[in-house]
Length: 477
Image (cartoon, rainbow, N blue to C red; front, side, top):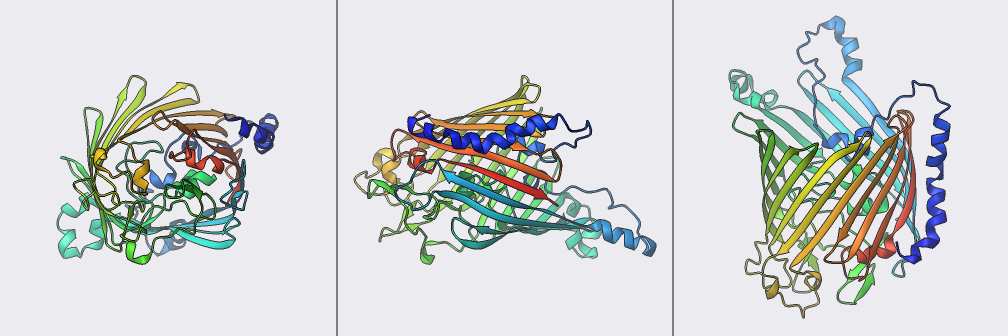
């Protein structure tokens, strides 16, 4: 850790002190202390809405009559949610910004699920005050119907045939994800919120919602997922209110009021495809995507950022090896606007590779490692005299990642550390979190986001002044 961060250690200890103290208090509790309902997420698993997105409660075959209506009505609708207060500060001053705050959230989430006989409606809405940006915001994270395709077809079409039973559908606002990486996304080209990720919001908010129709088919030959998004939805990237970023033109970090003008923001559709099958205990998958780059890395003739057209084609495999799980993934990003790779205003084609392995080391201690490589095609043809983001683009870029998770106190205390290190850029990013949830009613979470790098022009190095610590309290209802 650089010397300039050492002065911030008392603040970090103050943030983590409530968690350390709670371990002493735990011994005074009874043996019936409930376990944390979110313990799977603390182990590095995906959040609940990114796991199997619809599970039957076993009542689809029940026969209901009027005497059952009152009980059914109360059971069909489930309302839950949480309230949260979160505070975070950067560890040193960023000269491009006039605030030390990186997180000031007062948040309320309302979730409502309504189960029908063979389908369901789900909704999840966040309303919060962002004290860093100083205004109220809302986000509909889910508002969707999910069920069998047969439920939507007339009796004369779907009722007399079995083909519709092989398809499930989810339509509406939803969070989408696939791929094998841990915090590293190759074929997952659904929108991400990196500002939330870097500021210390819960991992749930790394995945941004999309308005989409997802059709899933299950067949003996293979299973298929098709996602249709009627309008392009990009990543939520870094903006001027919270973090600064490196500018090749000015050779320093800047924090402009960054936005993409309407004419440079596509309104066309996106289509994503996954075909997967398990063969001899190995799950294979193939992916396809037609749309646009998720970040505005291209430029128009006036030098303004824009999203360029892009197709993607990929493969992945997941298998048990030894006492752990191994994964491999590949994707080819085809920049369709510059097939020759000589236009510095348009990103070149790229191939991306990922290898990973994870396992339980001892009881309640899990570890995972990954190696990630980006290869830029035709890199030698780029005009590096142009002041564009291509100035930062080398032929190869590598990342090595490691995750270590420890669970204690009957899995109510979770300590999780994840580090990215780039041997090609000589920079790194450490994300460490401690979560304590002694009951299913409340949770306290604290952590750090620490960026280091020798050069401010590298990916993680540009965020060195964005290093921050945070604490959050969440109450469930």
